[in-house]
Image (cartoon, rainbow, N blue to C red; front, side):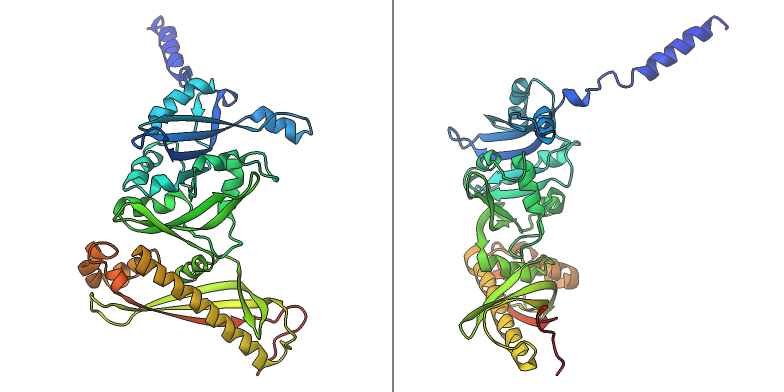
Length: 386
Protein backbone atom coordinates (compact mmCIF):
# COMPACT_ATOMS: atom_id res chain seq x y z
CA UNK A 1 0.00 0.00 0.00
CA UNK A 2 2.88 2.32 0.84
CA UNK A 3 4.29 1.80 -2.67
CA UNK A 4 0.98 2.77 -4.23
CA UNK A 5 0.78 6.15 -2.47
CA UNK A 6 3.46 7.89 -4.62
CA UNK A 7 1.82 6.53 -7.77
CA UNK A 8 -1.63 7.71 -6.61
CA UNK A 9 -0.29 11.17 -5.73
CA UNK A 10 1.37 11.50 -9.16
CA UNK A 11 -1.83 10.43 -10.90
CA UNK A 12 -3.90 13.01 -9.00
CA UNK A 13 -1.36 15.77 -9.68
CA UNK A 14 -1.33 14.90 -13.37
CA UNK A 15 -5.09 15.32 -13.54
CA UNK A 16 -5.15 18.61 -11.59
CA UNK A 17 -2.18 20.21 -13.32
CA UNK A 18 -3.53 19.44 -16.80
CA UNK A 19 -6.62 21.63 -16.31
CA UNK A 20 -5.17 24.49 -18.38
CA UNK A 21 -3.44 22.42 -21.03
CA UNK A 22 -5.38 24.16 -23.85
CA UNK A 23 -5.15 27.70 -22.45
CA UNK A 24 -4.25 30.48 -24.87
CA UNK A 25 -2.45 33.43 -23.33
CA UNK A 26 -4.15 36.80 -23.72
CA UNK A 27 -1.28 38.27 -25.73
CA UNK A 28 -1.60 35.42 -28.23
CA UNK A 29 -5.23 36.15 -29.07
CA UNK A 30 -6.73 38.33 -31.81
CA UNK A 31 -9.62 40.23 -30.21
CA UNK A 32 -12.57 41.13 -32.45
CA UNK A 33 -14.12 44.53 -31.60
CA UNK A 34 -16.54 44.91 -34.53
CA UNK A 35 -18.27 42.98 -37.32
CA UNK A 36 -19.91 44.14 -40.54
CA UNK A 37 -22.11 41.81 -42.60
CA UNK A 38 -22.92 42.65 -46.24
CA UNK A 39 -24.27 40.89 -49.30
CA UNK A 40 -21.39 39.44 -51.35
CA UNK A 41 -21.03 41.24 -54.68
CA UNK A 42 -20.47 38.06 -56.69
CA UNK A 43 -23.38 36.04 -55.23
CA UNK A 44 -26.55 36.88 -53.28
CA UNK A 45 -26.36 33.45 -51.63
CA UNK A 46 -23.12 34.45 -49.92
CA UNK A 47 -22.27 37.10 -47.36
CA UNK A 48 -19.28 39.37 -47.01
CA UNK A 49 -17.93 39.49 -43.46
CA UNK A 50 -15.57 42.20 -42.23
CA UNK A 51 -14.06 41.80 -38.76
CA UNK A 52 -12.14 44.52 -36.95
CA UNK A 53 -9.27 43.23 -34.85
CA UNK A 54 -7.44 45.29 -32.24
CA UNK A 55 -3.68 45.82 -32.48
CA UNK A 56 -2.71 46.24 -28.80
CA UNK A 57 0.87 47.37 -29.38
CA UNK A 58 -0.29 50.34 -31.48
CA UNK A 59 -2.84 51.36 -28.85
CA UNK A 60 -0.08 51.34 -26.25
CA UNK A 61 2.28 53.44 -28.40
CA UNK A 62 -0.44 56.03 -28.99
CA UNK A 63 -1.22 56.23 -25.27
CA UNK A 64 2.45 56.73 -24.43
CA UNK A 65 2.83 59.50 -26.99
CA UNK A 66 4.75 57.45 -29.48
CA UNK A 67 4.19 57.20 -33.20
CA UNK A 68 2.71 53.88 -34.24
CA UNK A 69 0.45 52.35 -36.85
CA UNK A 70 -3.29 51.92 -36.75
CA UNK A 71 -4.79 50.50 -33.58
CA UNK A 72 -6.95 48.12 -35.59
CA UNK A 73 -6.85 45.76 -38.54
CA UNK A 74 -9.77 44.81 -40.79
CA UNK A 75 -10.09 41.33 -42.28
CA UNK A 76 -12.65 40.57 -45.01
CA UNK A 77 -13.91 37.33 -46.50
CA UNK A 78 -16.95 35.82 -48.22
CA UNK A 79 -18.85 32.59 -47.72
CA UNK A 80 -22.24 31.00 -47.09
CA UNK A 81 -22.08 31.12 -43.28
CA UNK A 82 -20.32 33.26 -40.69
CA UNK A 83 -18.41 30.25 -39.38
CA UNK A 84 -17.20 29.36 -42.86
CA UNK A 85 -15.80 32.85 -43.39
CA UNK A 86 -14.41 32.97 -39.86
CA UNK A 87 -12.41 29.78 -40.40
CA UNK A 88 -10.75 31.26 -43.46
CA UNK A 89 -10.03 34.52 -41.63
CA UNK A 90 -8.30 32.69 -38.79
CA UNK A 91 -5.59 31.69 -41.26
CA UNK A 92 -4.86 35.36 -42.01
CA UNK A 93 -4.99 36.54 -38.41
CA UNK A 94 -1.97 34.42 -37.30
CA UNK A 95 -3.62 34.30 -33.85
CA UNK A 96 -6.79 32.56 -32.58
CA UNK A 97 -9.78 34.87 -33.13
CA UNK A 98 -11.52 35.82 -29.88
CA UNK A 99 -15.05 37.33 -29.86
CA UNK A 100 -15.40 37.82 -26.10
CA UNK A 101 -14.81 41.59 -26.53
CA UNK A 102 -17.06 42.00 -29.59
CA UNK A 103 -18.82 45.34 -29.10
CA UNK A 104 -20.83 46.09 -32.24
CA UNK A 105 -22.37 44.18 -35.17
CA UNK A 106 -23.49 46.02 -38.32
CA UNK A 107 -25.91 44.62 -40.92
CA UNK A 108 -26.23 46.35 -44.29
CA UNK A 109 -29.65 47.55 -45.39
CA UNK A 110 -29.38 45.52 -48.62
CA UNK A 111 -29.02 42.32 -46.59
CA UNK A 112 -31.75 43.02 -44.01
CA UNK A 113 -34.27 43.95 -46.73
CA UNK A 114 -34.12 40.35 -47.99
CA UNK A 115 -36.65 38.06 -46.30
CA UNK A 116 -35.14 35.89 -43.57
CA UNK A 117 -31.51 36.91 -44.16
CA UNK A 118 -30.96 38.80 -40.91
CA UNK A 119 -32.57 36.05 -38.85
CA UNK A 120 -30.45 33.43 -40.62
CA UNK A 121 -27.15 35.11 -39.76
CA UNK A 122 -28.36 36.27 -36.35
CA UNK A 123 -28.47 32.74 -34.99
CA UNK A 124 -24.74 32.49 -34.33
CA UNK A 125 -24.80 35.38 -31.86
CA UNK A 126 -27.04 33.33 -29.53
CA UNK A 127 -25.67 29.87 -30.20
CA UNK A 128 -22.03 30.77 -29.51
CA UNK A 129 -21.39 30.75 -25.74
CA UNK A 130 -18.66 33.38 -26.10
CA UNK A 131 -21.06 35.99 -27.48
CA UNK A 132 -22.27 38.51 -24.90
CA UNK A 133 -25.85 39.78 -24.70
CA UNK A 134 -24.66 43.38 -24.54
CA UNK A 135 -23.30 43.47 -28.10
CA UNK A 136 -24.68 46.53 -29.91
CA UNK A 137 -26.57 46.03 -33.18
CA UNK A 138 -27.36 48.48 -36.01
CA UNK A 139 -28.47 48.64 -39.64
CA UNK A 140 -26.43 50.68 -42.14
CA UNK A 141 -27.30 52.60 -45.27
CA UNK A 142 -24.88 51.39 -47.91
CA UNK A 143 -22.20 48.81 -47.20
CA UNK A 144 -21.75 48.05 -43.51
CA UNK A 145 -18.00 47.49 -43.91
CA UNK A 146 -17.52 51.18 -44.84
CA UNK A 147 -18.30 52.20 -41.27
CA UNK A 148 -15.41 50.09 -39.97
CA UNK A 149 -12.98 52.17 -42.07
CA UNK A 150 -13.82 55.60 -40.66
CA UNK A 151 -11.02 57.41 -38.84
CA UNK A 152 -12.71 59.03 -35.80
CA UNK A 153 -11.11 62.20 -34.50
CA UNK A 154 -11.64 61.20 -30.88
CA UNK A 155 -10.72 57.53 -30.79
CA UNK A 156 -8.38 55.00 -32.28
CA UNK A 157 -10.80 52.15 -33.07
CA UNK A 158 -13.83 52.70 -35.37
CA UNK A 159 -15.86 49.87 -33.79
CA UNK A 160 -15.44 51.39 -30.34
CA UNK A 161 -16.46 54.81 -31.69
CA UNK A 162 -19.64 53.31 -33.22
CA UNK A 163 -20.43 51.44 -30.00
CA UNK A 164 -20.19 54.68 -28.01
CA UNK A 165 -22.42 56.39 -30.57
CA UNK A 166 -25.11 53.75 -30.09
CA UNK A 167 -24.94 54.17 -26.32
CA UNK A 168 -25.41 57.94 -26.53
CA UNK A 169 -28.87 58.95 -25.27
CA UNK A 170 -28.43 62.69 -25.82
CA UNK A 171 -30.81 62.59 -28.79
CA UNK A 172 -34.51 61.86 -28.91
CA UNK A 173 -34.54 60.47 -32.48
CA UNK A 174 -32.86 57.20 -31.46
CA UNK A 175 -34.20 53.84 -30.37
CA UNK A 176 -33.86 51.99 -27.09
CA UNK A 177 -33.32 48.60 -28.75
CA UNK A 178 -29.60 48.44 -29.48
CA UNK A 179 -28.45 45.33 -27.55
CA UNK A 180 -28.61 41.88 -29.08
CA UNK A 181 -30.08 40.66 -25.80
CA UNK A 182 -33.00 43.10 -26.21
CA UNK A 183 -34.24 41.68 -29.50
CA UNK A 184 -33.51 37.96 -29.33
CA UNK A 185 -37.01 37.02 -28.22
CA UNK A 186 -38.60 39.46 -30.67
CA UNK A 187 -36.54 38.11 -33.54
CA UNK A 188 -37.48 34.47 -33.03
CA UNK A 189 -41.10 35.13 -31.99
CA UNK A 190 -41.80 37.07 -35.17
CA UNK A 191 -42.39 40.39 -33.37
CA UNK A 192 -41.64 43.66 -35.17
CA UNK A 193 -39.11 46.05 -33.65
CA UNK A 194 -37.02 49.19 -34.40
CA UNK A 195 -33.23 49.30 -34.76
CA UNK A 196 -30.60 52.08 -35.09
CA UNK A 197 -30.04 53.21 -38.68
CA UNK A 198 -26.50 54.47 -39.34
CA UNK A 199 -24.59 55.83 -42.32
CA UNK A 200 -21.05 56.95 -43.09
CA UNK A 201 -21.28 60.73 -43.29
CA UNK A 202 -17.60 61.55 -43.89
CA UNK A 203 -14.26 59.78 -43.59
CA UNK A 204 -14.25 60.64 -39.88
CA UNK A 205 -17.94 60.69 -38.91
CA UNK A 206 -20.70 58.09 -38.64
CA UNK A 207 -24.21 59.60 -38.58
CA UNK A 208 -27.16 58.27 -36.57
CA UNK A 209 -29.52 58.76 -39.51
CA UNK A 210 -32.76 57.45 -38.03
CA UNK A 211 -34.63 54.34 -36.94
CA UNK A 212 -34.88 51.21 -39.10
CA UNK A 213 -38.23 49.36 -39.05
CA UNK A 214 -38.01 45.55 -38.99
CA UNK A 215 -41.24 43.65 -39.71
CA UNK A 216 -41.20 40.43 -37.68
CA UNK A 217 -43.75 38.37 -39.65
CA UNK A 218 -42.08 39.30 -42.95
CA UNK A 219 -38.61 38.83 -41.43
CA UNK A 220 -37.15 41.87 -43.16
CA UNK A 221 -36.57 45.61 -42.91
CA UNK A 222 -39.42 47.53 -44.54
CA UNK A 223 -38.15 51.12 -44.22
CA UNK A 224 -36.76 53.76 -41.89
CA UNK A 225 -38.02 56.79 -39.98
CA UNK A 226 -35.82 59.88 -40.07
CA UNK A 227 -35.77 63.34 -38.54
CA UNK A 228 -38.98 64.43 -36.84
CA UNK A 229 -40.74 61.16 -37.69
CA UNK A 230 -38.07 59.31 -35.70
CA UNK A 231 -38.58 61.73 -32.81
CA UNK A 232 -42.31 61.08 -33.00
CA UNK A 233 -41.73 57.35 -32.64
CA UNK A 234 -39.53 57.97 -29.60
CA UNK A 235 -42.35 59.98 -27.99
CA UNK A 236 -44.80 57.15 -28.74
CA UNK A 237 -42.49 54.58 -27.19
CA UNK A 238 -42.03 56.81 -24.13
CA UNK A 239 -38.25 56.84 -24.33
CA UNK A 240 -36.37 58.73 -21.63
CA UNK A 241 -33.69 60.00 -23.99
CA UNK A 242 -32.57 63.61 -23.89
CA UNK A 243 -33.16 66.00 -26.76
CA UNK A 244 -35.18 69.02 -27.84
CA UNK A 245 -38.45 69.94 -29.51
CA UNK A 246 -37.80 72.74 -31.99
CA UNK A 247 -40.63 74.96 -33.25
CA UNK A 248 -41.60 78.63 -33.73
CA UNK A 249 -43.48 81.39 -31.93
CA UNK A 250 -44.57 84.39 -34.05
CA UNK A 251 -41.98 83.48 -36.68
CA UNK A 252 -39.11 83.20 -34.19
CA UNK A 253 -37.59 79.78 -33.39
CA UNK A 254 -37.34 78.33 -29.89
CA UNK A 255 -36.31 75.00 -28.39
CA UNK A 256 -37.69 73.04 -25.48
CA UNK A 257 -35.26 70.72 -23.70
CA UNK A 258 -36.83 67.40 -22.75
CA UNK A 259 -36.32 66.43 -19.11
CA UNK A 260 -38.63 63.41 -18.87
CA UNK A 261 -41.28 61.56 -20.88
CA UNK A 262 -44.12 59.35 -19.66
CA UNK A 263 -46.43 57.41 -21.97
CA UNK A 264 -49.85 55.88 -21.40
CA UNK A 265 -51.85 53.72 -23.83
CA UNK A 266 -55.64 53.22 -23.58
CA UNK A 267 -57.90 50.96 -25.66
CA UNK A 268 -61.37 52.47 -26.09
CA UNK A 269 -63.22 49.56 -27.72
CA UNK A 270 -62.95 45.81 -28.28
CA UNK A 271 -63.79 45.42 -31.97
CA UNK A 272 -60.76 43.65 -33.53
CA UNK A 273 -61.59 45.09 -36.96
CA UNK A 274 -61.55 48.70 -35.74
CA UNK A 275 -59.58 49.09 -32.54
CA UNK A 276 -59.28 52.61 -31.13
CA UNK A 277 -56.17 53.57 -29.19
CA UNK A 278 -55.32 56.77 -27.36
CA UNK A 279 -51.62 57.37 -26.73
CA UNK A 280 -51.09 60.09 -24.13
CA UNK A 281 -47.58 61.43 -23.66
CA UNK A 282 -46.59 63.64 -20.72
CA UNK A 283 -43.45 65.69 -21.35
CA UNK A 284 -41.60 67.66 -18.70
CA UNK A 285 -39.40 70.28 -20.36
CA UNK A 286 -37.60 73.59 -20.01
CA UNK A 287 -37.04 76.48 -22.41
CA UNK A 288 -33.54 75.89 -23.76
CA UNK A 289 -33.34 78.58 -26.45
CA UNK A 290 -35.51 81.56 -27.38
CA UNK A 291 -35.00 84.03 -30.23
CA UNK A 292 -38.06 86.20 -29.60
CA UNK A 293 -38.56 89.05 -27.16
CA UNK A 294 -41.38 87.48 -25.10
CA UNK A 295 -41.12 87.84 -21.34
CA UNK A 296 -41.16 84.30 -19.97
CA UNK A 297 -41.94 85.58 -16.48
CA UNK A 298 -45.49 86.13 -17.68
CA UNK A 299 -47.70 83.13 -17.14
CA UNK A 300 -49.74 83.62 -20.33
CA UNK A 301 -46.54 83.79 -22.43
CA UNK A 302 -45.25 80.57 -20.93
CA UNK A 303 -48.61 78.94 -21.72
CA UNK A 304 -48.23 79.98 -25.37
CA UNK A 305 -44.85 78.23 -25.48
CA UNK A 306 -46.43 75.17 -23.90
CA UNK A 307 -49.29 75.07 -26.44
CA UNK A 308 -46.93 75.44 -29.40
CA UNK A 309 -44.74 72.64 -28.05
CA UNK A 310 -47.72 70.33 -27.59
CA UNK A 311 -48.91 71.05 -31.12
CA UNK A 312 -45.46 70.34 -32.57
CA UNK A 313 -45.00 67.07 -30.62
CA UNK A 314 -48.46 65.83 -31.64
CA UNK A 315 -47.67 66.54 -35.30
CA UNK A 316 -44.45 64.51 -35.06
CA UNK A 317 -46.27 61.59 -33.43
CA UNK A 318 -49.12 61.63 -35.95
CA UNK A 319 -46.70 61.70 -38.89
CA UNK A 320 -44.84 58.71 -37.44
CA UNK A 321 -48.13 56.82 -36.97
CA UNK A 322 -49.20 57.52 -40.58
CA UNK A 323 -45.89 56.26 -41.91
CA UNK A 324 -45.99 53.09 -39.82
CA UNK A 325 -49.65 52.31 -40.62
CA UNK A 326 -49.79 53.27 -44.31
CA UNK A 327 -46.28 52.89 -45.73
CA UNK A 328 -44.69 50.19 -43.57
CA UNK A 329 -47.81 48.53 -42.05
CA UNK A 330 -45.61 47.55 -39.11
CA UNK A 331 -46.15 48.07 -35.39
CA UNK A 332 -42.97 49.11 -33.58
CA UNK A 333 -44.85 51.46 -31.25
CA UNK A 334 -45.49 48.94 -28.48
CA UNK A 335 -49.22 48.40 -29.15
CA UNK A 336 -48.72 44.65 -29.57
CA UNK A 337 -47.11 44.37 -26.15
CA UNK A 338 -49.89 46.49 -24.63
CA UNK A 339 -52.75 44.36 -26.04
CA UNK A 340 -51.13 41.02 -25.23
CA UNK A 341 -50.52 42.13 -21.64
CA UNK A 342 -53.71 44.06 -20.81
CA UNK A 343 -56.26 42.57 -23.24
CA UNK A 344 -55.24 38.92 -23.79
CA UNK A 345 -58.66 37.86 -25.13
CA UNK A 346 -58.50 40.47 -27.90
CA UNK A 347 -54.87 39.62 -28.61
CA UNK A 348 -55.80 35.97 -29.10
CA UNK A 349 -58.12 37.04 -31.93
CA UNK A 350 -55.71 39.39 -33.72
CA UNK A 351 -52.19 38.06 -33.00
CA UNK A 352 -51.88 36.04 -36.22
CA UNK A 353 -52.83 39.05 -38.35
CA UNK A 354 -51.63 42.01 -36.32
CA UNK A 355 -49.07 43.58 -38.69
CA UNK A 356 -49.32 40.98 -41.46
CA UNK A 357 -52.18 39.31 -43.35
CA UNK A 358 -55.39 41.15 -42.37
CA UNK A 359 -53.14 43.71 -40.65
CA UNK A 360 -55.40 44.86 -37.83
CA UNK A 361 -52.68 47.33 -36.85
CA UNK A 362 -53.12 49.37 -40.03
CA UNK A 363 -56.91 49.33 -39.60
CA UNK A 364 -56.75 50.64 -36.04
CA UNK A 365 -57.55 54.24 -35.13
CA UNK A 366 -54.72 55.84 -33.16
CA UNK A 367 -55.12 59.20 -31.44
CA UNK A 368 -52.09 61.05 -30.03
CA UNK A 369 -52.33 63.51 -27.13
CA UNK A 370 -49.40 65.45 -25.68
CA UNK A 371 -49.37 67.25 -22.34
CA UNK A 372 -46.34 69.49 -21.77
CA UNK A 373 -45.24 70.98 -18.46
CA UNK A 374 -42.55 73.65 -18.63
CA UNK A 375 -40.50 73.37 -15.48
CA UNK A 376 -38.70 76.69 -15.80
CA UNK A 377 -38.07 79.42 -18.38
CA UNK A 378 -34.28 79.14 -18.05
CA UNK A 379 -31.63 80.76 -15.88
CA UNK A 380 -32.57 84.29 -16.97
CA UNK A 381 -36.22 84.31 -15.87
CA UNK A 382 -38.00 82.00 -13.43
CA UNK A 383 -41.50 80.59 -13.83
CA UNK A 384 -44.19 82.57 -12.00
CA UNK A 385 -47.35 81.10 -10.58
CA UNK A 386 -50.76 82.04 -11.88
